[in-house]
Length: 251
Image 1 (cartoon, rainbow, N blue to C red):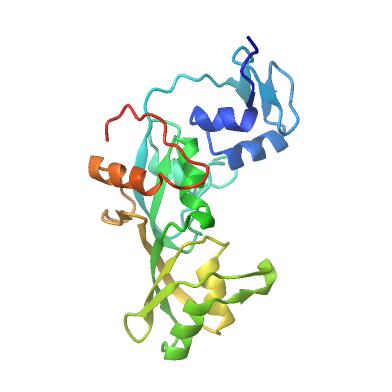
Image 2: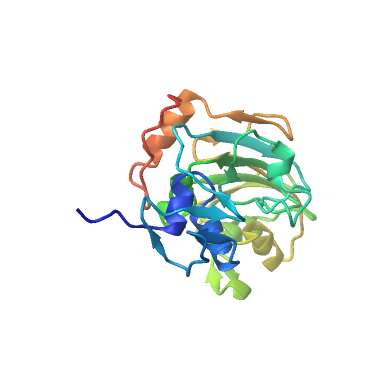
């Protein structure tokens, strides 16, 4: 019987070390070895191969997964590279198990971000084609006009990214604040959209990801409830890159 082969980035994701994207970065930086040898991108391994990151052997010993909802403060960076960024999310939370953020909130932004050690869930939540909602409350530097609301919701061309934003729902909350619900996550998307219309973002807070709502004080986190996880699972059933492994934490 042929040995099961698995790409190295998929292995690191499945054991909860990091997401596949982060794994690719580690491989590209030469920080990953297979049986003591630095591999090429896309290298496949067998169950008998010894995988290490920065000399630390990575073993597939997972039997539970962690799912956290964290209220990120302004000034914290959503990176797992603790050696480069001192104000990183991993050191700030100081969780006893290795976890990583699902997506990002830029440094000047605050609000809800999910963290996990389940690498398979990441793309299911983040891929724009899956149309999973993320809700934000934004304040800007000058009065919000009806034209602004219509333009923001109808799609904004972002020349530097060579993309036009998808249509989205935008509601005016007050003279200087609005709610926006996105199903894509381009780099600094809301700030770029506002800038295109000559508005400067003053504050940006994410208050919801799919069915998970922000309800913890700034700088604190909690585990997803059993009901939240059940609903999240249901929403992810038809997503691409999907399956949630059998979760033994019974959330």
